[in-house]
Length: 251
Ligand SMILES: [Zn+2]
Image 1 (tube, rainbow, N blue to C red):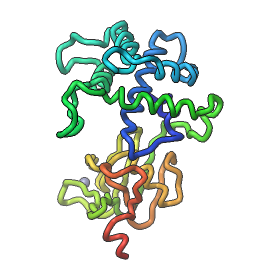
Image 2 (image 1 turned 30 degrees about the vertical axis):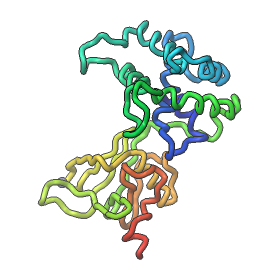
Image 3 (image 1 turned 90 degrees about the vertical axis):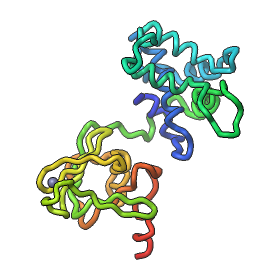
Image 4 (image 1 turned 180 degrees about the horizontal axis):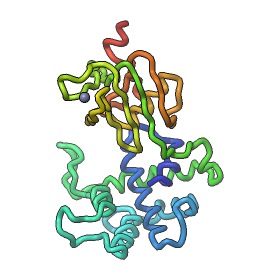
């Protein structure tokens, strides 16, 4: 997954279904390395491109689907397994290979193209544009460290609302507290040390919000922010500015 992300970062576009491209490329890299003979960063881009460009199966689905399914079978990840007890790698694969999803209410009847089929040609084109030696250029290493942000208030910002993060305990102070971002998890710790998480608070959005304070998103350690710290809500694009809000714009 990490190697697939590194490959896709130069052309990452939040307006596209990038998670399908990421999932597909991750599964392909996994299928080519699950025998333990090499690590994902050692798989040449040209080889991946060749796999993505291979003639499709009779169903129209990409050839990599067969390769990934076989690798899952060999690894013992492919069902039959009781529902709810399936391997997560198989779950990801099964969503990406689903030909029975409803694309549009007035669209063609299933079975149709799977998400994997939709993203495969575009992936091959992206890989063709990427120089082999430029694979790592400009891509920051993923930092393992935790980020703590102390602020007067931590506020989730959507286009039409501002929601200060508060603890559920009524007796706790309404100001202060801090944000902890640890890997993919983000949580709020109130001044009395109660921890809360919110579905609209995402680690990625919180890291991007650091840019308002002149810091890089991959900053780690403790950060003090004067005044409120605005974070874009998780259901908006990661690069949407937290200050792009009716109340903040009106100031
Ligand atoms: Zn509290």
